[in-house]
Length: 116
Length: 113
Image 1 (tube, rainbow over the protein chains, first blue to last red):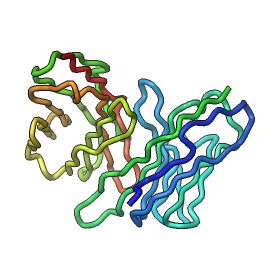
Image 2: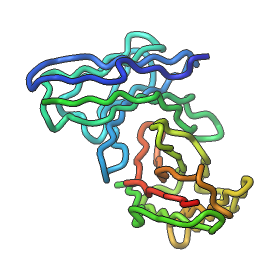
Image 3: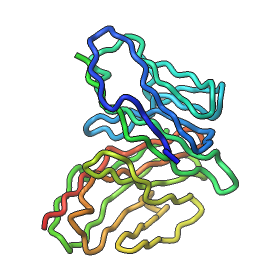
Image 4: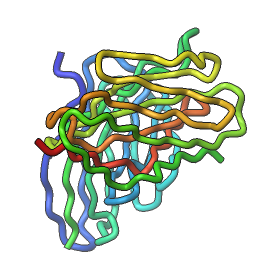
């Protein structure tokens, strides 16, 4: 099991460029999410998905798009990069809620993005 | 709205000291879940514990222990006899529902030899 994988690990963009951060998991998790981590602010939820074909916005969705065509993949698209999007991005996945309740999330290694 | 406060931004201790990391949460739901994650200098996020709102029993795992008190809306984390390898940023998180997990700002713990 590779767990949750993210590519690339590092990326530098110029303002206005677009790009896609890739995320994949091989644990057959239905729930996947994207967070950004900024100094002093913890992790903030950008978008999430409870299954293929279903996505929803989190706390800070502006400037980002997602889609979920398969259970395994959950790419995050930056439409027109801005310096404010300089951050570390984490993808996570978890089992759906069962009788035991909300399960912990497994995180990928992160992508460090710099927008100049 | 759900909210998690980790008032301690940074803590520095000397090896073998005990240290407690505070976590205070706000929620309107009666069913919710609390988590602690560790982020070592390498950057990955490591799950430590999950607790649901109906289980107020404290938990101990080796040198780690967690004190959940609904009366004060706190879920504090204690490391006994700290070690240099405990140096990391620790995040407390709250989930009210299936779809959303909110994190605190984190506490950076430095354990000096």
